[in-house]
Every structure is written in structure tokens, then in C-alpha cells.
Length: 273
Image 1: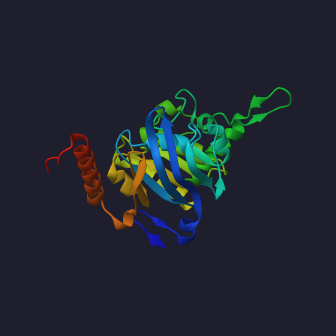
Image 2 (image 1 turned 135 degrees about the vertical axis):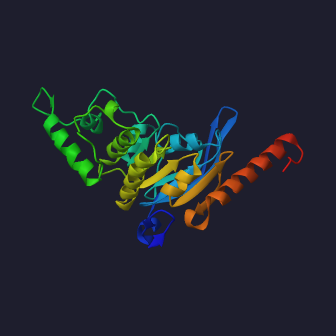
Image 3 (image 1 turned 120 degrees about the vertical axis):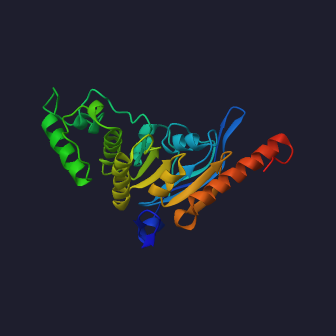
């Protein structure tokens, strides 16, 4: 077993490549958002993606989830070249995304949110919601992934931030065909107790073989959650390193040095140390 600072990933899972991006470019008019991105992800691996605002993180995530198409390069899932034309098409390849707003409906119950847009129904020509089945299935799945809630009947607006995030993760991974999960700052504005719930949930889903890419500005979160980190700068991945081989200090210094180089390039002279 390979041990990171956080959890263990078996060599077999880590070496089984799920996703690969090679030379991905994306332009918005005269603006180059991505300039030859190379990235890979193994089965059950948790990859941290960091970079300054405008570096290309959001554009890359939107390409991986089918929201944007790419201009050139190559994207493969399980070794098969893909070019997603919609979010639905990306989902058909097992890719789900959880953004910071979580896309939960506050007024609906926990179990209704878990089945949102994938409701179970019963009946013949006239279909009715199968609330009993959805309630039972929701309770069973939450128990399987060790998410403790007072009741699956509770409206999500009554839940804590950590519990809401857990529901979003549970909804995304409840489908058996989900292979890749992308999360945007999953520990944002959480206390230690709530964060521990999400950390354990992410670890358990990774252990079950779900691969993840986590976008976060907080390096401590990256080291808590991930196996490997990619730094994206000016539309390219400039660092790809196992977190067992680096530290928060080294990563911070790398980013500061890159910022200093950019400042020098813009100003045309050496920036003060």
C-alpha cells in the first residue's frame, strides 16, 4: 500500500487510469483560458487542483463535466477518447460535479434531494412518486456510507453545512455508474466537527473506487483530503506531485515564486524580495 499523509491507496487502484487530459486548449475569443493542460487520474485517487483565480481551474472543470467543449487536445475516460457535448453526456460516462452551492432544494426532504431529477415512481399510465421506496433507499445508502442524520424526512434547510455537503456527496455517488467526482471547496466555512464528516466520507468513497478532483484554495484542506496535487497556472499544469513528497510550506513557496516571476514579467524588472 502507498501511504499518503491522509489515507492509503492501493497500487492496483492508483495505477488503473480513469481519466487523462493531454494538451487541452480552450479559447474565449482572444483570451486563452487553457494552454495545453496535461492531467491524469487513477481509480480511487483524490487529486487536488490549486491555482490563482483566472488560472484555468474553473474552465478545466467545466470541460471535464461537459459544460464547455475544448478546442484542441485529447480527453480520454477509461482509455476511450471523449468530447462531451453536454453535462448529461459527461454523466453518462460516470462524471458528477458538486459546486459550492450544492444544488440542493432547501424546502425538500433529505430523501427527496437524494433522488432529485431521478425520482422513483410507481403506477401505470399515471405515475406517482414512490416516497416509501425512496425513503427506505435513502436511509439504507446513508447508513452504508456512515452519514448520520436525525431523519431522512427533515428538510435540508434544517441541516448543518457539513450535513448538507454530505447529502450532496451522497446524491452524486449514489448511482453505481459514478466513477469520477469533482468537488469545489468541499470544506469551505466548516468547523472541525463538520469537516471531519466530509473528510471521512471522501475517504470512504475513494476507498470504494470513486476517483475525485478537489478544487480548493486552502492548502491545508488539500493535504487533508488528497493523494496528489496539480498546480495550474496561466492555463497549464506546472506542478504534479504526490503529497507524500511535499508539504504545505513547499507548495506555498512554489506558488509565491511563480507569482514573483509573473510580477517580474509584467513589470519588466526584478520584483523586491
